[in-house]
Length: 474
Image (tube, rainbow, N blue to C red):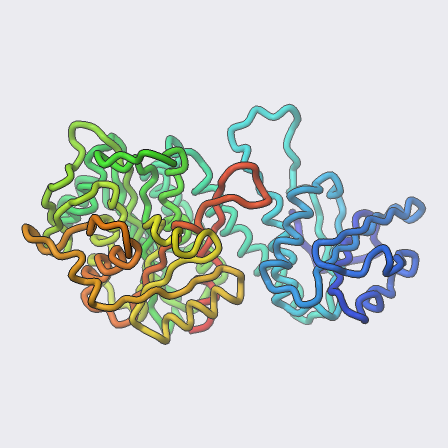
């Protein structure tokens, strides 16, 4: 979809979004022929009204947003248009924004329209050619002095989120560890990000033993991805880690239900990769190092076993209680590698880690773990601003003993039906070397799920926009 803020005499689809207030209809006096009684349309949330003016070759779409819509509700309202009413979008489209729309509301509207163009049918044989959205020209009329800049920003946010959608939604025989490594390399080349990748042989030389243990049952080559974004004017250095299990069988502790959805177990990787694209695309003045450990947790004669004791990059030994607690093993090596080789002001990891987080918060909120109150507050405020909710759970040291092992330094699972997300976070904390500003975000319930935009579970790009807001708020 091509976007312009230069609007002349217009013919085509005209979108008129309304907040539900007494001044709503005064906002669009430039269209005297497009008047609707407030008995038919008053701007109520999720309401619409279509008015066609054949003589002027114009179709007016009145869109109700409600009284005080937040960022996410505005975004979803516009996403519905392109997702569910694509037949209205032909050639020329004009989005007219009233004075009620500030930069945040405009950003939400434009990014929503772009996100709605995404379709899940990547491998379907279409009965007809899919819509070519690149042929749609979107004009924007706004009073904002930075309208063009805001539109471009919205476009970049949506582009990164759509990339994250795809990485999660594509099947595991497409999105392999090597696929993610190649994606990182290509993004690095086009966005000025330095990328290096350790394959199995190089990872062995680097002593990434826990990372390698998880992938040793798969024929697919594990990939330990390191991305470095280094702008000249950076004042802060952020470390990001994203769990990249491209498919999770559970290993020998094989999953008994829901395995068909385990292509989503690289949702943390998709969050971090999409964020790196967006950070570089916007040229943020923040230095960022990202580590994305990517493996497939499969089963064959080489697979690691329950009760194995494995080494780790940190030098600590780990007793494997459950091979389905694999994500924390690859994260352990990634976190250790980050803390040993990079000096970061803040260290954040994103992972689809535990069903316990889903049991606590459902599918609307991610579980946050940190001992740094300022970091917790920043992440909460950043998530609230864009509708990517996060809420803290305790990191008290009284949970630490749950991960004690008699044979090794630590065990990877406490084997009890309680506090699963918390004990997983305590395991990860063990490998952060006491980093003063570390946070773990368990996105098991938010990275992949149901919504109104598809008939099956799909990627959400959760965390991409949250991380952008977080870095802008530093």
